[in-house]
Length: 215
Image (cartoon, rainbow, N blue to C red; front, side, top):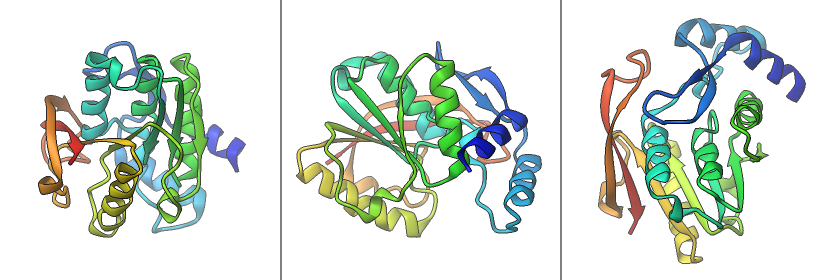
């Protein structure tokens, strides 16, 4: 599946600079709906998830910008990018000098996209394709969680898992443009950025996205 997923990503995206994040390029799609329909046909599944991996989302853009400004947050440390999607945040961590970076995503197309995008940017990212929320938090120093609060079932699983990670001594940073299920009471804001997104995925072309530390 990995080779066919890689071919699919290459066929439906093109390498482009990431708006607002200097020095990173990704395999990105230009339109959501045609790609989503292509994913549904490829998987023969009308309920296939949105191709999150083919776009730079607001929370990921904020985290990537923050790591560009504050590389010491990850420099020399082991980093996990939870729900990695395109791998944008994982790549930003690698470029900031992280000792080891893992991108975790259960979508096989995302796995392929992370590998392709890491190669384009000259960084090494290990890819994990299983659902880490069913396991204990891994042995890392930092967990980065961008755009994981867009639906309630996922949010209800992510928060207690991140809290367990923090209790284990792992630094937890969250990036999000203020989605409905963001647990704001559990977070302390570190930085904010105006990010450009697609109106096919978000309600505004420009949004204010923030980086938080889990309290």
